[in-house]
Image 1 (cartoon, rainbow, N blue to C red):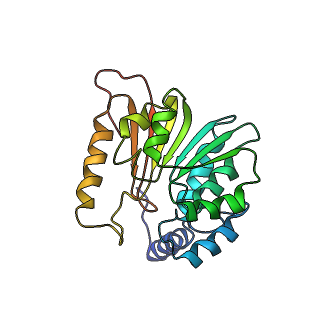
Image 2: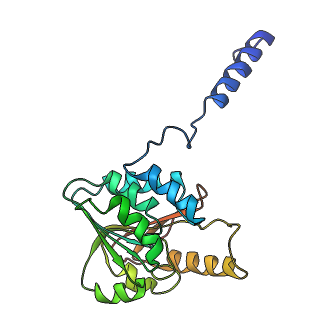
Length: 224
């Protein structure tokens, strides 16, 4: 047994404090994809408060970079904040379809990102688009609007390739949630966890993110 003297204890405490003070800061040095700063300025000017936060964008960029030549779907372009992050992680052979029903918001994204040949903008209701593309398959779907998340969930998940990723955010309480929305969030999480064709990870991080991977269903499959 090693006897720890007073000086050693103090030294250990000091080292612990150093470790704590140098812990990972998940908001620093995330980088800024092309076009993002201009989009953020326009977003603020419009008073649009529902854009994805930087940590969500950084995760999307990382996930999509793991899908070389990927076919990506974004439901809810908004002003293009998450769109810019997705494009920042995509390689030259990847393609992104992004859907937004609000023409004013979509015009901001298109103005700053529309010259990128990898992205196709669709200004239309997401539920209509989901029905039209039912035979297509995607490597990653970021669902950030009502359809494909709180409605038409089966239609969206049916578009995933095996191994494809379904990503949603805003699963932690938000200041702009209307009355009753918390129950809808709980119901959505329960539905995702109950599906045997998804491996689900819930993260108490950023605005509350869930990442689900499509897999062959098998008896006894459990969510994380």
